[in-house]
Amino acid sequence: MFRVSPARFLRPLAVLATALILAGCDLPQAVVTPAPSDPADTPARLGPEAAARQFAQVVETVEPEIERYCRARRADQRCAFKIAIDHRRRSAPNAFQTLGADGQPVIIFTLALIADMRNPDELAFVMAHEASHHILDHLGQQRRYAEQGAREYAEVAARSGASQAAVRRASEMGAAFTARSYSRQFELQADALGTRIATTAGYDPLRGAQYFNRIPDPGQEFLGTHPPNKERMDTVRRVLAQMSAGV
Image (cartoon, rainbow, N blue to C red):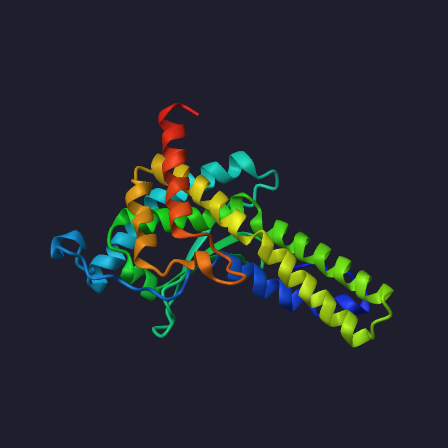
């Protein structure tokens, strides 16, 4: 998947960068649903059959818009999206984007996340967000940033006379810090494009983004990969205002 420099101090980078990149595209896994002041404020959780129907409907309506946006933006035209389900019942609520063996994009949802989606707007927004990571080439960008950080940190360590083991550790640290430094920016970019995709697919991204209010706010996490929930909601509102103004 990644082309990595054959230099000895960069050998651990492929595995490390893979983990960092996938982690940067995940939704926060712990889901906490606060008690509403009025039971009517929070829709009832869907049963398995209703959740499956909702998922199929959203895939059918959102996937064509995802491909349309992708083909307009990606020169390589790698836009044959596959929507997959992680059927492991113990998997936490999560969704992420990755690449298949053929280099085509894959969006994976866990059963727990599909069950936790309270309405089609939430599911459509999450799907559009994850697709946006591929459309904007975030995996490729984060890989390149990780490789650059690994080289720079390793070169500094080598010039200081560090041992080979220390140079390898510096390389790993550089990859991790550099890749994570861009993660929040990528998440907001995916929120922005995801808002446009969900809207043109016929969904309400502002209602869909309310999902953020049911998960822990990651904004204060040390080296966190996701921006504060308020910043994400503000991004959705800003893009909707731009679309209303014809921008």
